[in-house]
Length: 308
Image (tube, rainbow, N blue to C red; front, side, top):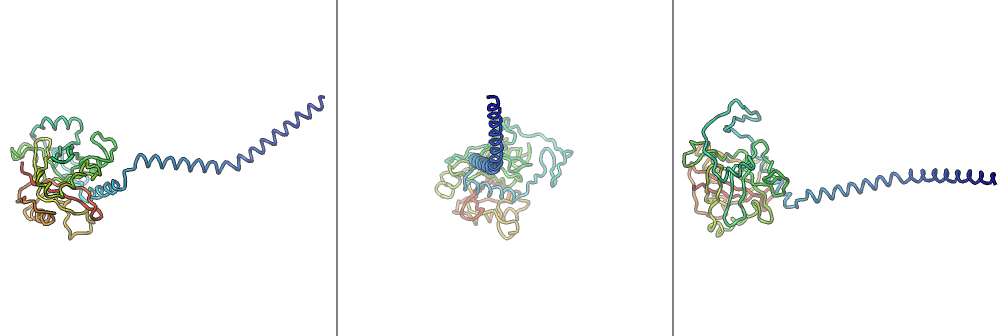
């Protein structure tokens, strides 16, 4: 009995040893394909997550890329700010200028207190456009995909071009209580399918709609302004190498009457219909720019002349 028991125990050990060796061989053979399969599954899940989180739709992607290109087509240099002077990429803090400024209006003071990147408010009757306007001189595209609170948003915000100076004074005081705005303030926004942001600007292609809603209301931090629609036209963002075309998005300041006339003549000659609104040297403009799809990098542009 003892001999048989010992034999049986020995056989059992041999059987377990053979099983473990066989198991190790199978595990070694199956390990690579299992790891590869696991890796493929993880890549697939990661791609799906990124797709769900980051997907903005083909049209929105085109809008984002086009708007990005427009923002990059102009210089992000801001000159002669109240808090200092920016020359090229260098900021001279020693050039700080102190002056008495007009007080912020009560309604804009409240908005500014929530986000100091706010430089104004835009509203157009007959549209859903009723938004704060943001400007970040050192990162022009910051609000391209962020909401007012700085959180990710496919809608983004309405952006003031960094070369646009909204001004810190009031027209009533001939801007002696602050700084004068640039001749032309350019605002950018996404063309959203649901009409939000600048999606509703397409309505201005209709002359009858424009005649019924001829005024753009834009408030700076210090005063309420109104602009009468002077021209609605289609354009595009051109290559930097193209110098024989009208690049409306590069006009901010009329350094002389010739520069003013060049801008004015072009926006009037391109207009989709006659608005009956004229301008003269010294007038101020507000330009709204949104992606359009008549050509690659197309734009629908609405220019208003300040009347208040």
